[in-house]
Length: 147
Picture (cartoon, rainbow, N blue to C red):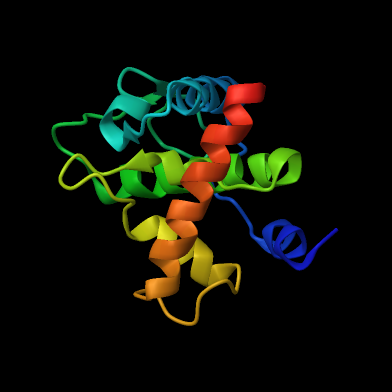
C-alpha cells in the first residue's frame, strides 16, 4: 500500500460509502465518460440519482441540480472521494478528475481539497493541482478504454 492509499484509508466518509447503489450509478456514469474520452458535469453526474443515506433526515435525497445546497456538495464530494479511492486502488488514478463544473469545465474546489488532504499539493490553489488533474484525466481515459 502506497502513501496515497494509506491516506485514503484514514479519511472518514460521511456519505460516500452509505449507498452502494448510488455509488455504482455514479461510477457507471464516470466510466461512460472515461470510455468516450469526455468529461461529465456534476449536474449530469447526479441528475435523478436517489441518495438513500441513513444519516440524512430526509432520505432518499434527489439533488435539485438547478439549486445546489451545501449538503448536496458534501454528499457529491464524499461520493467522488470514495470513487477516487476505489479507482486509485484499481488503476492508479482519481476517477473524480472526470467530473467538472458546467461553468468552465474544470474540477470544483473539492478536487483540490482532496489533493490537499492526500498530501499531493501544498495548498488548495496550486499549479501542481492543475497538473495532477490533467494527469488523472489522461490516466482515467486510458484505463477506461481498456476496462
